[in-house]
Image (cartoon, rainbow, N blue to C red; front, side, top):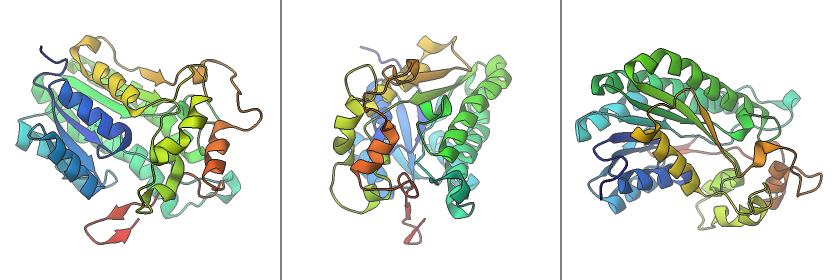
Length: 297
């Protein structure tokens, strides 16, 4: 049986773990060849090795234009072109009360990774997509970009920007048969809720730790899984979605459909942070290890 993405070539940023890794596997299962782009060098290489010839790893810090250009060129060099870019890399970013917002490196990294990185991805993907006669650009936004209260302030602002950037670019690229859409996850069981703890080097399953809380967060009575986002991305990348562009697809189990407070007066975000003993200042921040210089960022 043919796959929905037969013959297509994709680049997935943040592809070494979580929603990105699930999407990489889904794309390959559906017939695509995929470049796994990430700063998590060991995880990315292992995933590519596990998958086989249909996937390769490219180290890419999406804040750096040279890295972004490099991952797109890897797709062309290894697989002959590009049909889909999924700008998925991200993390919780700078957090805390507005008056205490750290405007230094934490702020710059948050905006750089989740907004500038998306812009750079689009910039360098467009020529390759035009050369193919069309294609798809997907970007991970969030329910935090649709309404307030589901993420730190800067994260929420950046995700809202990704949604409107996708709409704006969709208008430009539509005549070239290039579709541009955003995906807005709700409560998905990934290590993002554990913040820095998820990068402490242990073997803890942080996704499993948040599942009991996520299950109660929205009307649909189950936890959102990375595969839910992978399924949405696969549809939007496929020819079945050839008339869908400029859209923000919410994948949240009904979370944003209306007022839903099964956790009482405690917000879902606060409940996650309390589960890991974190406070508002560091709850969703992330340390990224750069294997090229041995330093944490």
